[in-house]
Amino acid sequence: MADLMTTAQRCDLLGWRYGEVRATTEILSAPLTPEDQTVQSMPDVSPTKWHRAHTSWFFETFLLEPSLTGYRSFHPAFAYLFNSYYEGVGARYPRPRRGVVSRPGVAEVAEYRAHVDEAMTRLLAGGLASDTGDLVELGLHHEQQHQELLLMDIKHVLSCNPLQPAYATVTVAEPSTAPAPRWIEHPGGLVEVGHDGAGFAFDNESPRHRVHLEPFSLAGQAVTCGEWMAFIDDGGYERPDLWLSDGWATSQAERWEAPLYWFRVVDDWWLFTLGGPQLVDPSEPVCHVSYYEADAFARWSGARLPTEAEWETVAAPRAGGTPRGNFLDVTVLHPRPAGGDGSLFGDVWQWTSSAYSPYPGFQPAAGAVGEYNGKFMVNQYVLRGGCCVTPPEHIRATYRNFFPPAARWAFSGLRLARDR
Image (cartoon, rainbow, N blue to C red; front, side):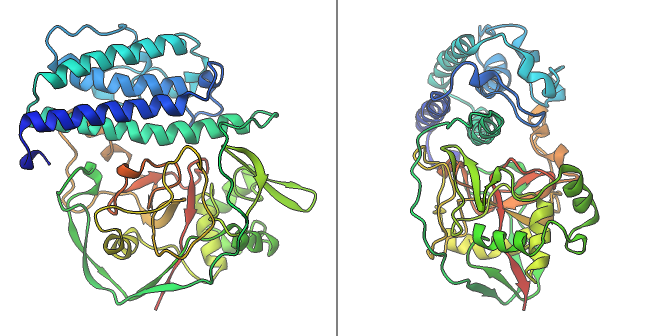
């Protein structure tokens, strides 16, 4: 992008994008009370006000302090409170204890955001070197990641409340029948995967490289709740032969009997959504399942999870420049019933069988921002495709999301593959 426009044009575009992204974070926070924004329901969840402050800290730490002459930080303690995992820029407050920090409150966090926004406006107005503009763009995509995390986290927070309050009023799709299963066949062979350098991408999406694939088929739709009910009814959570050893041990220790947020009322399955409790729709993609559950389901169904290279090889040509799917829409915020549009994107992140590891020739970015992805390349699995709370302009075919195999609070589902 920087090669195709002048510095002034790029600053104007980044300024517009900055305003849009920052405003979206506030729109997503608006339905929540100060009390809602302070709760931390488990160590992996962060309070909403922390997300709002941390994304401001990112711009302050990596852009304003080194690049804006005369900039004064909003509060000297915020560098400690709102650093997430960047060891290279200093000490950080323990993640599992973010929920006990009652101050700064929501109002002061809003003042912090306004302080950073005003300074960023001045920075962008003064013109940016190419590498500084790249950092602004990284900061915007970083904030969009936290918009998704904000919704993931507040869903878990509200689900722990016995009142089961809704985050917002959302549109509930009419019950429907899922289309007949279909498979997309691929002949295999030598393919290229990874980002090609055009437009923004995180460092973990590069370099582009060649991979050999055996012939395979990829399911034309994500696994549905109705299919998952059949797995439950057939004793899927009670059969150790279906599970990886560590998955079985985790499932037994955590007493998993269904996806996260599902619960029975007499003979019906219900689930908690950002719009409150609702009946499980058998035609919508199953959501909030771990890698362990996804792998067990695939084995039960006589199929397997795709590799990330298989997924990308099928998805990329179908995406073109702009993937389509059910992405972030504040009136929906939930997977929609499976359709037949052929898109591999949206609704739920899809587990792959690929461990999150570096591509051949991977080099993390220089400096502290190099801690963004590379140091997490162990004990995690890759998910692809985006979900119903992913900002639509944030996703692409090469995007590599990643979580530990036991994680369930992400909007994670699965799509099957099989050998030909």
